Image (tube, rainbow, N blue to C red; front, side):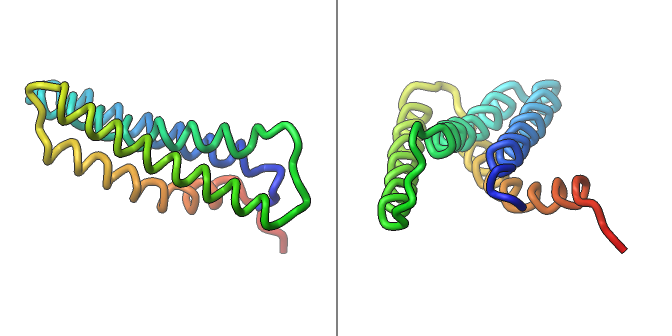
Length: 131
């Protein structure tokens, strides 16, 4: 994957994640409204910080050639993403009543697993094989 294609590729992965979690949430709303909203919240708790970090990382005004500074910015983005994730979990557990904590956590973990698997699927769909 070329570096200039990374923002589009990552954005496509994140979009598919959101759509899959939303479809699962809508499907669950037929039987259990609390579980459905918990799944959607769990997906949002993963997706919002990931989207924020994606935009922050690839929309910098001046890319630097200094590897140390670039690495420091990437680690800073990850730390801020972690803080935002913890804050969103705190808000969800503190403010949302009723909440299905198992569905929320499974959706969060499922979003992580989708982040691992979707790039492989997207790469297989978009790659051109030369003979």
